[in-house]
Image 1 (cartoon, rainbow, N blue to C red):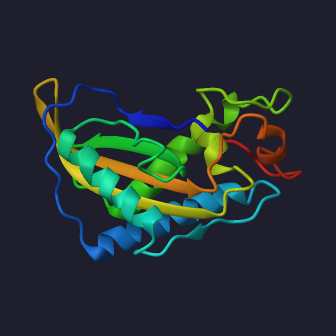
Image 2 (cartoon, rainbow, N blue to C red; image 1 turned 120 degrees about the vertical axis):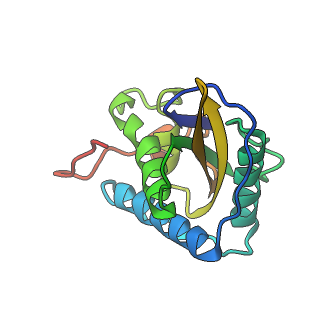
Image 3 (cartoon, rainbow, N blue to C red; image 1 turned 45 degrees about the vertical axis):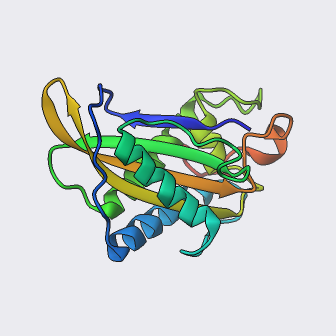
Length: 194
């Protein structure tokens, strides 16, 4: 199992300060992320994901990790042990303006899925350039838990809001040897572009 990070745009981070998110913002983020994941999964002959409950370790762990990333101002994966073997995609976006929680859920999901054009269905296996995409559409994955936090970043002397998104997946995807059965070609007539 391999997990990857997605960054948009790139830059050097200075110290990050996590800003609290309301329950409404968290709900908007999680709902958006779930809807975007399932819209992409609907292109394939696979089932939609269900959202882990707010008290589920998949959700609480994702939220805790997103807050950790916002505090340290770095984008890095948690250990497989910390996430109980769940798959994980992480994302950060920088903006000088406020960005809605729902938009971050959409942008993170779109970023992860955008690797679809790099995937070779004729040679199904793990590739670092498609690991986010393959986790999003992994057939055996059934449950999604997501968290989001806002920090700050200084890039080239300018201060930005730094929006961190973490989604975790069970069962985890990107399992070597299982790609042919889990990363399926799109349904006939469906667009596979991001």
